[in-house]
Amino acid sequence: MQPELKSGGEPKTNYVSIAIFAWNEEAGIRSTLTSLFEQSLFGELARRGLSCEVLCVINGCSDNTPGVVQEFFDELRRSHLHRHAISARVENLKERGKLNAWNQFVHQLASPEAEYFFMMDADILIHRKETMLKMLEALENNSVPQVAVDRPCKDIEFKWHKTFRERLSLMVSRVTQSARAQLCGQLYCIRSGIARNIYLPRDLSACEDGFVKTLVCTDLLTRPALPERLCLAEQAEHTFEAYTGVKAILKNQKRQIIGQTIVHLLIDKYLMALPDGEKLRMGEFLREKDRTEPKWLKKLIQEHLEATRFFWQLYPGLLTQRFKTLKRLKGVQKITHLPAAVAGALVSVLPAWQAHSALKQGYSNYWPQAHRSGLKELAAQPHGWELTATTNNPQK
Image: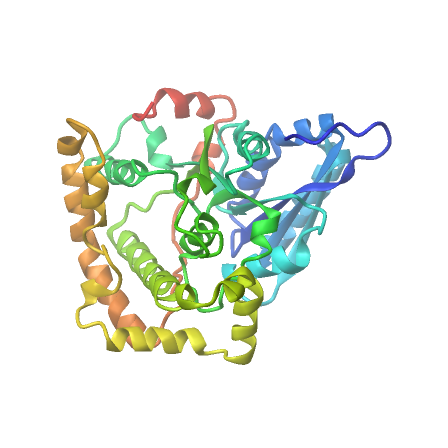
């Protein structure tokens, strides 16, 4: 249920807390921030007499990202229509890594009064102005979901003329998105209560979204998975820059495979066996493990590799998951999406071997810097790109 309006005076203490996780995003973060503060969410919160805080959690940057963000926030305080309902600040963490930034935001930095957390990356554009409000309302109006997500759109969806490789990339995405709502770490809204019961181990690597989704859908592993804990907000979308270069695609696949391997062994081979009492205090338990046994997860990884004979056995369905998803499609879609499923499986072979080799050498925290052109061209279309996202989207 939506909270009642506050009568007169200043806006209520922060109802929503938004984290923007940034690492060396000097070149493009202004576009991200511009799209964020054009969201209708802020006007709606102001109308209700509520306030919102925005924290740019910068982690281990070596460029001028903090300065760019601070300058933007200074402008915001002078000119934003709903500035009286918004507080914005930069949190500059010395330690690199989104996992630590996530933990710091949830357990240290966010307002204790916040009822909802938005987690977002600093290299996306939120091209539908109702996106974040739709996500918030999806949780306010239904007590079952704990996390609301939107639909992530590759920037190449907006192109009228696409190359064969771009069309194949989009088709692979549609195979993945044909499953139930997926938690994309680029942008999601989570109830603060469940988030505060989660702690991300320092060696979890790149798949924190898969870890969070599993804990949310199983009520911290105390019950069978309930997919309804995760909901897809209608007409809510954001844009990210797709990997189209061969090297970039392979590196991203390697990163994902390392992350999914760690999530698999952490959930299925370790945490699932804990007593329910330990599961219900999951965040405290994992934080204490990191404090008292800093290499405990690396040890689990090495034990898993010793018991894993072939690289394609890092986790169940490494090469076959896309075909399982394909089975859920109906009619002619199974045929039209088959090439994408085959291509996706073939593209995973080399990164799977590389991931296996990296893990054997003890490299679990693999997060290569993406050398991409940015979303500046798309962001420079202030009046046309939202319409284009609707009319040129082949899924619509």
